Image 1 (cartoon, helix red, strand yellow):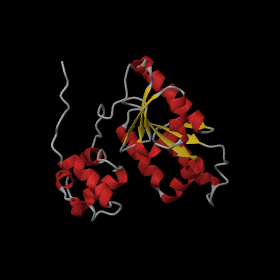
Image 2 (cartoon, helix red, strand yellow):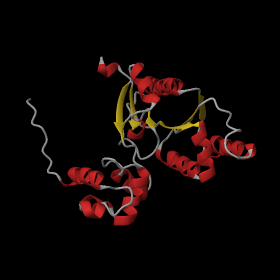
Image 3 (cartoon, one colour):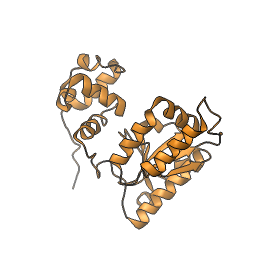
Image 4 (tube, one colour):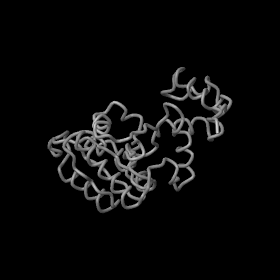
Length: 222
């Protein structure tokens, strides 16, 4: 029965990933949502960032990783990183092994975030399921996008805007920086929205459909 299935929230960007397919194959109940932080939500307190080995190394080089870890630490009570892939992490790109070791130490010790190795998407799905099952069994917590509010005003603003269709964290920040406030984003015209980089006519129309349409709930019979 559906209520007996393990529920996991997944970021919409993971829609076509092998992890989603593997989760479905294992009978998990997947809900795709634009997550402002992390790739998967196993409970209201457990958020997981999945890093494939090449992306892990690239994110060290371009500085993305530390910012992502900071947001994970601020948002979730128990964040985790799954490092997926069997490539030799020290042979990718021209990065000194000590830089990679230093980053791993920073994640594990400085941020207190566990790094869990995974061979492939199927393995990653199994780890996510194990996390979600443990949460349900021990804490009886179903994952919820709204159980834990980001602690800062800026994160709360980003959280609200990132719930709009086709908007993820980076784009939410761009919208707020360009337009100013959450209210300004909500009330912006399609023309104003399209002045923000990466927002075309289709995405602007989709956002306006949500923000500008009357609320007309379906009438249910008692």
